[in-house]
Length: 352
Image: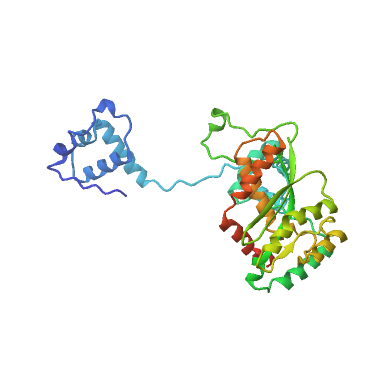
């Protein structure tokens, strides 16, 4: 509680010159109430206290009386007005545990069967507030690859074999993969930090079109030491075209490197074809067996996600394939060194 000590002799001269006229004072503040309480303890007159805070004596007297009466009253009991309580709250929690994918309307309709009358049944808004109050938050499910039981077992064995590798083992791994980039993807989500109502006032929108615009497939690779090339793939990528790509963009890097690099690619039929594997073996490019259905273990997937996110935030929609290629090439060349190294260092954590 705010403690205000006011000397009796200085009360009027100290506060009267700063107090606003009574006509300007409409409502007493909490500080005004404290001044009234402390001044009354010093037995000041109502008129003197009114002059201090710039109010009327009758207003000061009524405020003091209300404050004293309020202190004598017992604490007010809080009565819940929610229709979801007691037995209904237990039913709702059980239904949420059984099926967390139910909508507010579905839950409300099921609770109506538990009520004696329709007027006693909670609506979908009551269900929503009950869920928020009790910690049932609307959460976005993480996306995970659908892995068969056989591949789950193989993936587990592979992870156990390589989790004991020293940390510098992963420094010389060259991660590679392909991705499709669309100039105007329909599924992209954009988030902005604005005040309430500014989206409409500033006419902000996530632009959509009937098609996804131009699209280009890119192949890229990187290691902890450096970023590899980003290549725009023309036409359909088959084993023959893939070998030409590796011969032109990957082979020179391996021959010019003074490190024992290891090449990693996923289990795509193109990557694992006999012609591709023979080419890699003939040119002395060591590879690492990769578990099937394990894109989450490959850090280049995170690289693609970051690149696409940065491209979406630029709010630039390329009109041609060349514009899209130029945009992606610039973003690829501006990847931070720390980000690249952190991705390579994350492999032991992914395997655990």
